Amino acid sequence: MIVTRRPLIAGNWKMNGLSGDGLALAGELARRIEDAADPAFDLLICPPFTLISRIGEALAGSAIALGGQDCHAVETGAHTGDISAAMLADSGCTHVIVGHSERRADHAETDTQVSAKVAAVRSAGLVAVLCIGETEAQRDAGETNAVVARQLADSLPDGATAMNTVIAYEPVWAIGTGRTPSVAEVEAVHALIRGDLAKRLGDDEAARLRLLYGGSVKPDNARELMSLADVDGALVGGASLKADDFWSIAQSSA
Image (cartoon, rainbow, N blue to C red; front, side, top):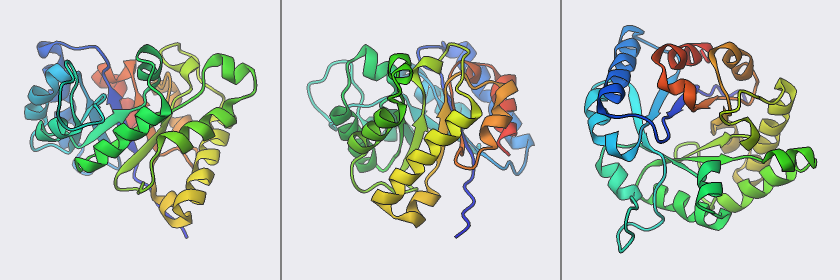
């Protein structure tokens, strides 16, 4: 079976952006995708919580999707400072990033907690962008495959489909460092992920599910990375804050 997966280029703005800069960036990207008429890729922007509603207004009518950077595992309750997936849906989001390495490290999130968040995202009718990836120490110890396989198995609850889930492989040591794995290393890990998904979901569903690469994705390495058979787009950090860079990466995927 031959499956063509439409590339997804997701911008994770992290804790960056005030109203002026954020609205200007979103507006510029909306203009570019409108001018492109029929782009061969999907765009997703995940701004800070403070900007979601206003960025959603700026993107209204455009082909760019809106996402949150995290969510709580329950819908309501006494969880000061947290945001539920239902709240993100109510604000116009269609996607939520879960399990990002910065959440796993800075907030000590476990695979079990991440799995609960993925389930919450699905319950709210949104798409989970599940992040997995090894640290530098794990990579140097030759544990990349074991760590990635474990995180995928334990962070992804049953019921995943190509419609409700995207997987993002982000080697922790490459995020924001300017370093990237070799093309062969990226290819091997993505093939491992696809293979493990096939065992759980069946060959057909696994073949439809999009796998993104993240970790120092830039205009000068995007085309090579996204030419790989099992790389279906990118989760972009710093480069997503510059319209020219983010747009160039998106065009590289087509």
